[in-house]
Length: 232
Image (tube, rainbow, N blue to C red; front, side):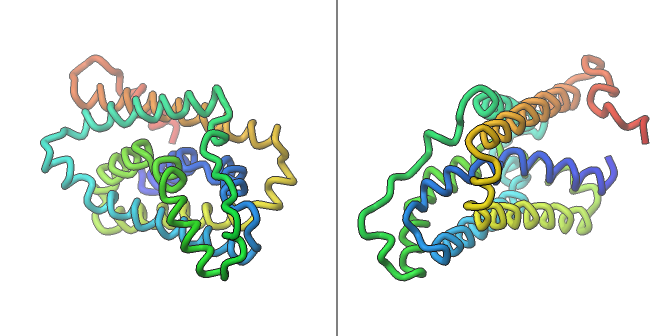
């Protein structure tokens, strides 16, 4: 896998996991009654939290695995199982509806900064965690950190760039919440969530195949682990 392919695959996997567009209805429900400025400030806090949290696991994930004595193939298989379960739930049901937050009386009357801080504190769980950054996202970051290790500092910079790009997508999607909600409608939002869930299931199966191949000999064909390697 080239460095360019690594960055593209990492971005697609992380974007599908975090699903900024699919979470727009949830964000809209969680900031009901907010002023446009207050909603934008909350979006900034959430995107910065996502970047900082994912960056921590990207830079330290392999060391944490070594500390607990967990092999990368085992972590890859476990992460794949979690991704598959999450993707299956997204593909089969309205996944985001269960996380909506009710409006709190009087909260919208606060100043922009006070409202954003108060609402962000309430949204850390379950919105920022585990919806945006759950076990699946953490597993993906750790797995791709191991893949990027072979490229040294350039690989680390590429991975951090991908995390920054996904965090920026979160910010932009949440800033455009009114526009996206009107453009896609309820049916469009459901389609987005379910298609991303299907993509997530496929990526999860690929993680599991790779983990089995790394921990065994001769069970998984190389063409199944890297199906498009000969196409380049």
